[in-house]
Image (cartoon, rainbow, N blue to C red; front, side, top):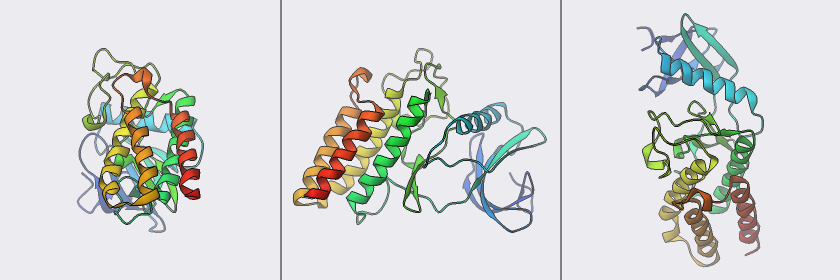
Length: 248
């Protein structure tokens, strides 16, 4: 935990707790000179797993570029505890917005995120933790966050701290090696949940193209990973659907 007066390693003052369980914790915090609000993420005590996650996220984010990536301002170590300091943004989940959200807006932001995911895959990485909490919007820009569990393609799956509701059926500890198809399954699962909430109150042309997105989600969540579309193909299909929706 932070010190009794709410001070984090690096002399950051806690404003709000974001995530306070597991080996990695995160907070909305204030810099020591009280000039800037930041997103603090790191270990509050020496922990080999948490240290590995923080170092892994810093390494992968350092090798990627593009809009939609939340990159750290600083990577610091306090004693034996590493932490990352990110710019603070007013995020909300792209997949858990209100039912009144314009589906076309959602479609455009989702296309941005899938395009970014395609870049991640092209760079040789698998995110490994695609879920609504990591698919966010801030300032009308889609963001893919939390790369602590990301791995290079072909790395073995080691098990803990993943989100079981979004794991592809082929992802089995001890025998699975990461492939981008697992990200596609997780993304399709998350998108299906969003559509199921919103399709019921849509009418006419809007309901028609949302149904087409639903068919895409079914293809993304096929049990055979070889039959799932690539992230690049999903991005192109979403562009086509967005153009179609705009002309209806």
